[in-house]
Amino acid sequence: MRRLAPLLLCAALAACSGGEAAPKGRVIDCIVAGAAKFLPECFVEDQRSGDRRFLTVRHKDGGFRRFEMVDDGRGVVSADGADEATARWSSEGVLEVSVANERYRFPARMKADAAQP
Image (tube, rainbow, N blue to C red; front, side):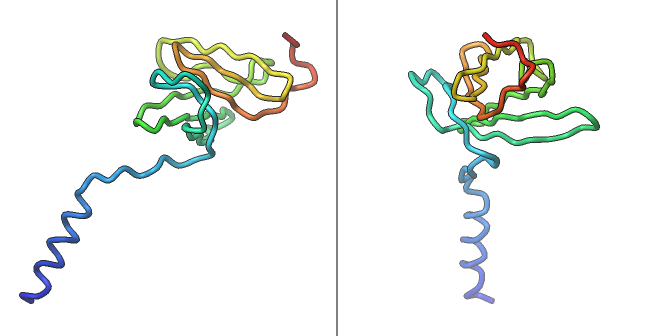
């Protein structure tokens, strides 16, 4: 038992070391935390609640934004918080969403009946 005590102590310390786990989800390009350009540093997870579909975008620093997907041509709207999301479709089929000073690029398909910019 004396030989096991140091190993158990090391295992306990390793478990409590607070090592950062990478967020889960698909990687998307984003501009957050004062970045100057889009970088593949955000992770998006898809959740459903009844008929509603939500996207949670997690930042590497622990911050996050939640969006609700809508079928009216906008793509997504803010699901939480006081800041409104604005979205625009690019010709490359990317939905670029801005909230406050953060921007996200979601690979997506534009609906055929959605309003063109």
